[in-house]
Amino acid sequence: MTLRAALAPLVAGSTWRRGVFLLLGGVLALPYGILAVIFAQMLADSAIPRPLVYILLVIAVLIAVVPLLLDGSRVLEIAAVRALLGVDLPEPAPGHHGDRETRLRSALWIATHLIVGALVMIALFSALPMALAFIAQQFGIGVEVTSRGGLGPLDGQDGGWLALTGVLLLVGLGYAVAGLGALAGSMAPVLLGPAPAERIAALEAQATRLAERNRLARELHDSVGHALTVATLQAGAAREVLDTDPEFVRRALTAIEDVGRTAMDDLDHVLGLLRENRRDRPVVAPQRTLADLDRLVTDARATGLAVHAHRAGDPTRVPAAVSREGYRIVQEGLTNAARHGHGPVAVRLDLHPDALELELVNAVRHPDRAGPGRGGRGLDGMRERVLLLGGRLTVGPDGDRWLIRARLPYQETR
Image (cartoon, rainbow, N blue to C red; front, side, top):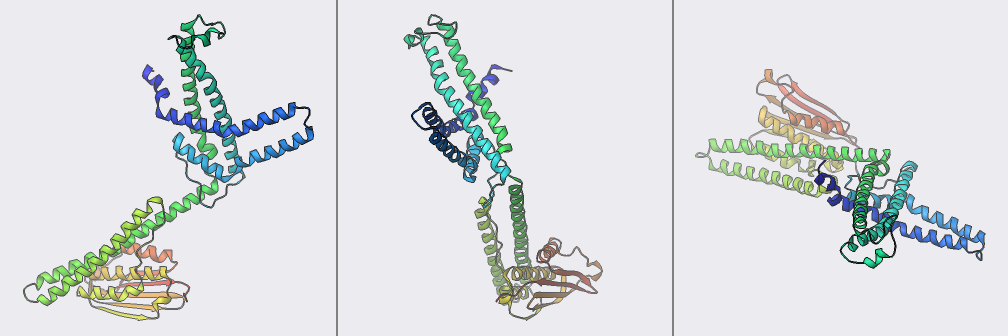
């Protein structure tokens, strides 16, 4: 081991931060030390009745123990450990109250922090001035202090040895702080780590965030995919009649502008949510619902796709979650029909008091090639949407047609 490596713990920033953490325990231990001195004096004073002293002592002990068991004390210790010891402890679950084991582990950590911090503070206030005095007398500063007494076999005449002793005291104090800080860093996850209930709550929160992000990805796929399909088909059709039918070209450009603007709105909305989600707040997907179905059908017709839509029931009574998912399923079905289908698309929505039933049917260009892979990720998204709502989905070739049929149960809103 090189000298530089040996001295690295003494000059490392982490050692200084750990020293501050230990001294913080000493500062918090001061009221307990003052109480101990007061009660020692009271016990030594025979004029004060012993029963009164014992009663006050029991009350003081109870009051002193309470902070060790509070959830707030654990939260403060976790914050100090993360900032000063550099240990990445998870934040306690919001609204979670620790069980008995967690409180006892936390109380043991806080008590150890106070005791070790008090010892470090005592060593700092005693050994540090002594070491500095021993070193300073070597340079003729404060000689009268060291000349009055000695340290074991050393006296004021052993200036070189006293200076060496002072250096060793400083180095030893530095290594002690580094070692105790490192030990605290290794023990913090054991005594302040999450309880089983907190781990479960954290896993559930993480699963919720992942589910919302997956949903967000589906929303972007459906929205942007639909917009690109409409824009591509409209641009291709406009190119064919650019010189002969300028009115159609004008309508095509208008449709491209509309779907592009809608896709940009969805994209801006999603990016805004992602920026807000840097603090792990839940992500909410864009709010396209069955109320936007007429515009969706109009956009699909603008591509040249014949769409025959039939709706029975009031969409305002459908819960928002079901309405959003129903809209996205229809959107994905129309997008796939425009890409892969042939001929008109029949869209049927039946809004029952307890379920939304929807069906999309269209012919396929090559019946012998139709298979479960049509639509790819979009069909996987459909299945996930229906599964999350506890519904049923049928999708695939039906003779020379492509069929999508879904049933999404719900409780009707009033």
